[in-house]
Image 1: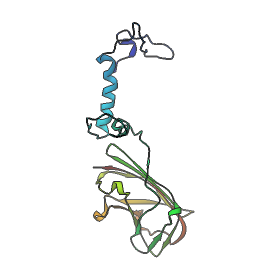
Image 2 (image 1 turned 90 degrees about the vertical axis):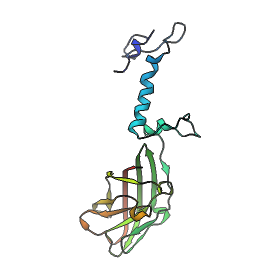
Image 3 (image 1 turned 180 degrees about the horizontal axis):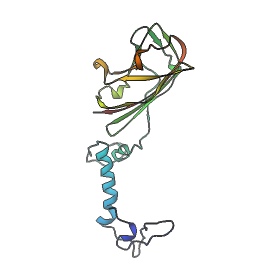
Image 4 (image 1 turned 45 degrees about the horizontal axis):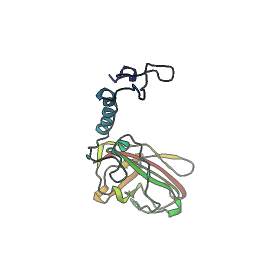
Length: 203
């Protein structure tokens, strides 16, 4: 069980604002020892283990990256830019740079979070889905299919259709495929939109 601050050597008794106690400054302050620090250190190490991050033996800073912050999911999203490579299974898909509302990702441990919002998409011909090129920083990553989740929708302005995701770097080309569930085709026409939220374990 974790240590209560009030039970540390020369700790301060619990109060309304600090139910489990607090630490005191000098003179006669709370003693700095293993009991004081172990919960903090072990909590950070637990976050690293659960995040699948191996400590690099370096100080956490700008140059070395912040591994503990990454394990806790505190790092900011990385903007992947407005240039997307979208290739339909058949037919054509047209997306202008101004139609990409956001394209961002972050990696927490071994988990990739990738969000895309695209507006005014024009689809011509018959297609059951499309491929999306991975951001350049992710092209060397491999996806673990068994731990893949996909929970977003395809929208044509009035109706929603569930999308399935073809797992992994499709055909080794550094892209992910999205297809309408049930084998239906994407709606032919313009003014369509995609809200895509991808969560996948990577190695």
